[in-house]
Image (cartoon, rainbow over all chains, first blue to last red; front, side, top):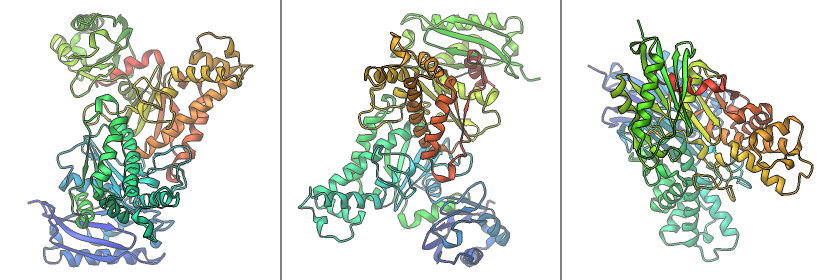
Length: 317
Length: 317
């Protein structure tokens, strides 16, 4: 009989979520450990991950674990390493042999990739992309990540780093500076930070003197959403603007891989039609006629709190 | 013993090239027939193709033909049809059942795709992309086509029409109108027509009174190349401008699929460093640091006169 469980590990900047996942996407056991280890403590972190997996799996038995999937910043499928993750002191400027280390400790196959790729596999296995062979996952969080599935398989590319759609150019000429150092990247506009920045800029322009956002010191994308729900003109315009940029970018992505759907995950996706409507309109206005009104833009169907573990776990099946 | 030959068929707007291809990429027999048939003469055209194949294969025997590969405008891999090709009167606004018809006549498996996809497979089988599993082929001809290979396989997408990189947005805001109806497409700049148009526009601006192109009535991209060879400032600037747009677009393509190389085919690719140098510089200036100076831009290694037949034939192996 096939082994019945996998382990999903989602390595974040602050915490690492670890859970046991079954074939139906249930998570019978999960926990959270800290990701905060010092520059020389990579092994200590990995030891903590191994110990946690062992204790979570204790009552079902490690021999029932088919594999371990790990989603991590700059996680590379080919090498099994985290390759330079600036937000993790123990992986900043260096390579951490996640796969090799954990396999040697636990004697279970380990698969590593980045968090957005893991999310795409999770969506394909348990979520909105079930049954789809060609789709693009956009994770709209603090940054903009992406996982691309073509003919049923994740696209890793020649070096394992494919799918950086957040760093495609979305606004040429005087585009906003992105964290990556280039100007006009999609991430500079369509991330939570980008949305908050647009709202702040427009507020300071003085064109929206009546916006409820004027009372808030540190505007977040959640504030913009709540203001939009109240009918705030500035907030609604910010979503229209962001959705238009997202839709224009998606038209380019469709021209590349002709997906069946684009799946949105993360904070911004929760803004619903405020973001989906302008996005859909801008995408269709820029698509070749063969694709017009044929490409779905849909929200993730995974519970946000479970998605990271499910996605990482799904890598291991 | 495996069958030793395939047939490559390249359907163009004016003529259709048909050739027998062996495993090493030699073409022991080839010929050209007309593509010019009337709106109701699709079957007549396909009969001509079948008759030509039979006569070309006569001395080796049809039983030695493993398959027939057809590259055609809007050729669809999944359906085996040409789906609305405006340049072919017999396929304009309608679907032509190429695969089904020819298979039933010749009793040999037929594979259909578009010409740029066929070129990519030809390059992977016989040309500059041999041994590569991840690359992007750009065909810079009258238009801009593309064939994308990921993990050793052509990307067809959900509907068979993936890889329309000529219609990704290359110049936002006041971009030049493209034949597809949208503004700022890559094809509006990086095609032979686009290059000639840029030269004409700049000439008319009056900023290049001394250009040798001023004497030419109908400037072609070949004229621009020859002028560049003579050191003509306008011509060199046109290639720099075109190469920059191509390079910026390629940076976006790399962010999508992280290819090992980008292969250039067609007239513009023959302009050599006039186009490769600005392209390489613009691509690297726009790539994430993980890819900087790591993605090759290389010319096709197939003889242009043979490439179409080799590409179509390679589909059939």
